[in-house]
Length: 140
Image (tube, rainbow, N blue to C red; front, side, top):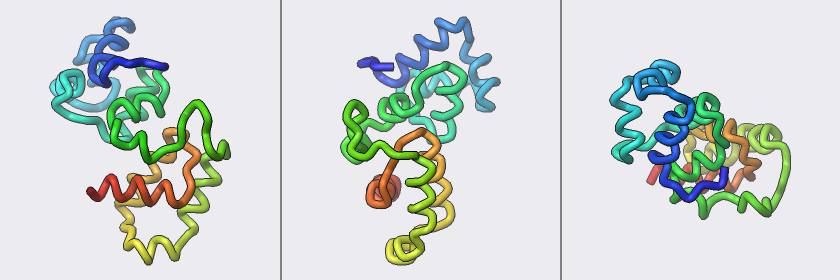
């Protein structure tokens, strides 16, 4: 999915292509129909968990959908066309989870770990430092 469309427009176009109403998509996602309207009109941005479910239901690429919804994160992540370290995302996530010294030094909460875990599901092979950069963005 190499789209120049804004997040909401892409979601709306794909939803319509699949002949889904906002209410039908909302039901599949477990949210209210008004939430879909807010997403499509850029009045709200989706959570990481919602991005994952949207990508699965609308058959879109998770990482590209994430970057459209959160373009400020693009500078924190490796380039998609030339990844700096193409490795298994699960291994990168496990290294970060097991880096207890980082958790203590940066006072990472369980809730933040859960948010970062959702990001790891999107398929990025991130280093511990990139997880910290995303955490800084979340906290900001």
